[in-house]
Length: 251
Image (cartoon, rainbow, N blue to C red; front, side, top):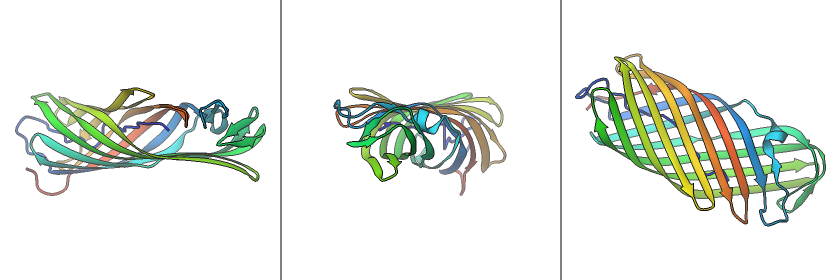
């Protein structure tokens, strides 16, 4: 299954100037459309399955997507961030040729397809740098993925779930362009071995008040795995718009 997923420049703790009080808690709700530029599958990946394109079956999109971030900052240089990012794509499309998927044979023609990639993450990050214009964070992310690829054609049904843990490196940075405006980069990524994962976002945020901000931008999630059990690689593109709330007293 797609490993990374990363998800994005969310739950940023924006700081206008050094020494400005910041919120201990940050809650972000993000929503927007998602597209796919490729989504290739072969299950099993041992010579008995057929490699086919879920993008050709389901199309490029868009589909609705959303995320929820909760960030806790217990100390000035330390932060913990929780993410819940469900995603399900369901479409009826067409197989151009015969496909063997999860030991089931599908014939050319109409087929119902489902692709689910739910991501749950816990990120710890440490603030390496904080200046008048820039802030840099470095840390790690523990990701739990709950993914499913499914095909259904009449009485023929193939389904492959994939529940697994993925460790990712985390890097984030803010660039304060002008008072109230922040350009943020957020990355969760891992490469090597039989798979890779990149979740990268670039967003522009604006402080509506001391407690409320809005931000929007582009995020992509790309990656997958090439092992005997599965071959799955996908590239997803998100247009993200977020509402950020910093409740409670600052610190």
